[in-house]
Length: 265
Image (tube, rainbow, N blue to C red; front, top):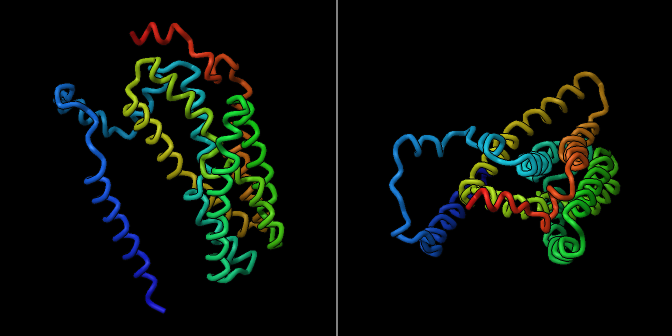
C-alpha cells in the first residue's frame, strides 16, 4: 500500500527506541573506583579491526581452535543467508512476497519453539562434542536438501536445521570458550569483543562469496542449488572436521586446565 521505504523508517524508529531503552534501563556495572583512564594508544588498539588476532597469539590452542570453529558455524547465521534465500524463493520456487512473508513468520516461530523445547535439553544431556557434532550434521543434512525447486522439500529442509541454525550450533563451545578465556587471563568484555569482531569480518565476506558463486553458477549453467551445498561445507562440515582434531580435554567443560588458572593468577 505504502512505499517500501517506510519499512526502513519503522526499523530506524525501532532501533532508536532500543537505543534509548538500553541507555536508560541497563546500569553501569563497573564500579567508579575500578575504572581506569585509557591512553590514546590503548583506545586505538580497542578499535583495531584485527584485534581478534590476540586470541591466536595470546590464547591457547584450545581457545583459538574453538573460536575458529564457532566463526565458521556462524556463517550459517540468518543475516548471512537472507539475500540468497530471498533470491531462491523468488526465482526458483516462484514464491510471492506474501508467501515469503508467511514463511519467515512460520520459520521464526519454529526457531523460537525449537530453542525453548529442545535447546536446553540437548545442552544438558549431551557433551560439548556430542551437541556440536549433532547440530553440525543436522545443518549439513538441511542445507543439502535446501537447494531444490520443490516447495515441499524446501519446507521439509527447515526441520533438521532448527536445533542448530542461527548460531545455535555454537552454544556448547561458546560456554566452554568463555570459561577458558577467563582462566587464561582474558577480560570477558575483551574476549567477547574480539570474538564478535572476527565473526563480523567473516559475516561480511560470506554473502559476497555466496552471491558471486551463485552468479557464476547461473552464467556457467552449473546447478544453482549447489550454493546451499557450499553453505553446508563452510558452516557445518569444515567446523566438524576441525572439531575432530581437538581432544575432549580441550573442549569439555570439566577439563579446564588448572595450569591456565595458575597462569592467570
